Image 1: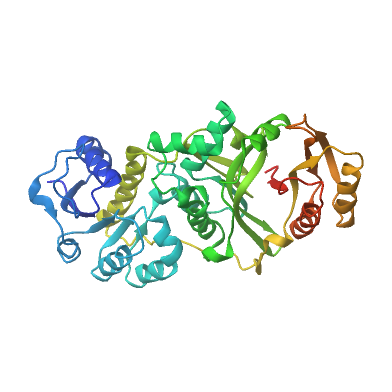
Image 2 (image 1 turned 60 degrees about the horizontal axis):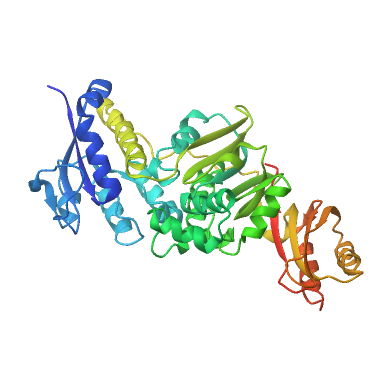
Length: 432
């Protein structure tokens, strides 16, 4: 008789029902591959009546998570309700009851992961979270296991499908930000309130987990510089394209000597780079490692079955440990002690795209160039575009590498000139 591993599922929404569907539809395939029967013993959800895309015995349902957490026959708990509370409490109680956990909850792990992972280790249990970053893209497993011998110098991630869909739509179809956002909502790619996605918070949560895997450090959300895409205009997207760039919302972690940069913001990427071609709701994580070199992990960053596939992968990993009677630790993480501090955004150096809308008068460009020179900022290229309206003209510049705080000080001074008709726009450039 095949050994059975009992699973309790808390959260029977889109991803939860997808995981159950995979376990049901691929039951014989999974059993033949892993030599185990993964059995959904109980399902907890506030809504037990709505129709899902998978048929489930109504006797499995409960509205009380304690029915799952306190069940001694359940080996693994899958938490898919999202949010911080009560998800944190459910996971902590599950670990204390001797159950390992699978979750897709990036916000919870980013905020409370240090405490949760420590509790898991103390109790000899595991927390697996492949679906928390990039849905079905196996980035967590790759960093934790496939690249275990590597040291890392950089992470560059397009890790939010909503923002990437909006920017791609703006670029490919000449749409304004607001029109592209409304289309994302209409297609179900954006929430009714898309703030977490378009303002970069979701990307920052995922970046925290990637940093932990690569550098062994938990970075607080407030220590990440975060800038969203809501201020990106169609004009900037088109001018960037003319210069040979695409604009993407990037989650970035870069190690340089004993400092680590951590930031999320719109970024100009050369069209020749693989990341620039990542379109629609797709995600991609570009990792720089010392042994394996530069690697790109690419795939759908959202979707029921993509995320559910990652949940099932975690379940299979855990069941193999249970089958062997072994403890599969949450993470083999070693802190990179060579990193002494986080580099603040003002100290970061990069090239910049600058757009200024000025009065069409003689001497304007010389005046602007003088201020930039005063702050040690040199210009790599400058283009004066066609007049947008009478006596007003856009000027687009690309700078050489400059320190962030110097550039911002220069633009603040330039923005006070009478000839400047709109707030100056500056977007960082990464050659990756």
